[in-house]
Each structure stands twice: as structure tokens, then as C-alpha cells.
Image 1 (cartoon, helix red, strand yellow):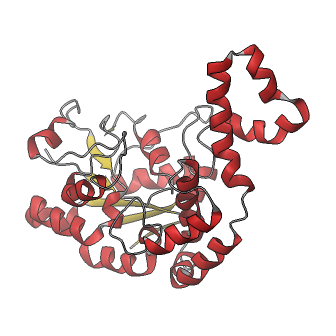
Image 2 (cartoon, helix red, strand yellow):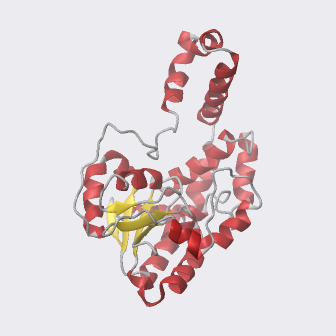
Image 3 (cartoon, helix red, strand yellow):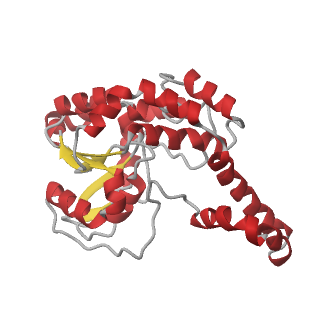
Amino acid sequence: MLPDFLIIGSMKSGTTSLCDYLSRSNDIFIPEVKEPHYFVASEVSRAHSDICIPSLQVIESNSAYKKIFAKASPGQMKGESSVSYFYYLNEFINSVSHKYGQEARKIKIVLVVRNPVARAMSQAKSFMQYHVVNTREELIEFVRENADSRHFVYDVLGSSEYSSKFKILRDSFDEVFVLKGEYLRENPETALHELSGFLEIPRFEIERSVTTNVSGFHRYPILASLDKYSRKTGLLRFTKYALGPTVSRKLKDKYHDFALTKNVDLTAIEEYLNKVLKIDMLSYKGYGNIFKL
């Protein structure tokens, strides 16, 4: 029981939001396992051995992969999303070809992309938020050292290499739908209507009041407000008494992680990314908000 379509990335572009939207359609089944990494399991497992990612779940066996789609109703289109597929694109294509056989070219591919420099910056900032590095200098060095490292979490350039990977996708699949994450964030209804046509399912309405992890917004929205008002109101000091030491400490830690990257001057790393991703930026700008390869 292989899926009818695959959302292949890219990281930090809005795939989580897209899956959340699609899961609200009665005509689509998205498994509870957010990213099974099934088609590049060996590559992801190798990368995972070098870093502890508690939320990472890699499904390697055919039986386990089929099981995550077991609850799909008859007639539902089955799909899943794994950002590692775009990073390890050649391995992904070889795996799809092996598992789908002659039907491989016909599998529907959905790719969510984002401004390549902004996307890479977002990924790089997460290294400071999660204390992989602690200073701007360490961050710049870390990014440079891990370029082409074959580590999909640490290599911030690999998931922004649009120019070369667009061509590979065009040559490998008959149906590739590309959606810019910025457009999905601002115009989800229009984006989803276009995607519904590509997937050949009825259009469905979404509830705009429902919040989701849309790329470009912080995962903890309250932190943005804290950053703006805490100095004036002393709110963080107040939590020490109002919420107790344990809760206030956790809140303070989350705020610290958020403010750490917001207040650090990362101009040097942005200049570096603009230089090495120049061709990919031109490729990105050359396409509309929604396009097919």
C-alpha cells in the first residue's frame, strides 16, 4: 500500500502546515507519523546516529510503512511528507523507482519551497535556539563546516539548492507541483484549491481561525509578544511569583532561546548565504508562487 503522492520538502518551508491543511480533507489521508523518511531511511538513520533528535522516527521496513496507511478509507488519496526526500534527492528517486517500478514516474510529487536564503537562515538559527552552537562566530563556522556534509539536519545549503534539484525532479517525474511557502502562508485557500486540482480531489474549505505551524511564524507565538513587551512590563519577573519557580523557569528558557537569535547580529552569515546561494535565488525568483516542473 504505497502512497498516491509525496510531499518532499523543503525543510523550514511550510510542509507541516500543508500536511495539517490536507489532513482536514475527507478525500485525503495523511498518517499520524509526521515524517517517516521511508524512501531514504538508510541515509537518515546514518545522520541520526550522529545526533540525538527525540522526535525523529525512521520507518525502514515495508510492513511498518504500509501500517501507517492502514486507517485510510477506500477512495482516499494517501500521502506523506518527509523533508529528507528533497535533501537526499538522488537516493529518494532511486528508492521510488525501485519500490514503484514502472509507475514511479507517475507518482505525484509536491514540493514546498521558500526563499532559499531565508530558509537557510531559519535552519541555521535553530542551531542557536537548541544550543548546538552558542555564538555568532560558532554558528558561521558550523554552517561552513557542514556544507555538503550529507547530514540533512546540519547542512543548511543542501535544502536550498533549487537550481540543480529542480532539473533533477523535472527529469525524473511526470507530475511535480511546486508551491512557495510564503504564498501558502498568505493565501492558503487559493494555494489549496490549486493543489486540489493537481491531486484530482474536490476542493475543500479550511478554517482560517485554526492556527498551525506555518513557516515564518514562531512556533511559540507568545514569545514574540514577550520579546516586545517584557522590558516595559516586567512580565518575566512577574511570572516568578505568579506561576511559581518551575513554570517561570521554563518560560524564561523558551524566551531566552527565542531572543538569542532575534537579538544576535547574523549579517555575516546572511551575506555568506547570499553569496553561495546566488544561482538558487535567481532560480527561485524566476518562478511564480505556484508552478509545475
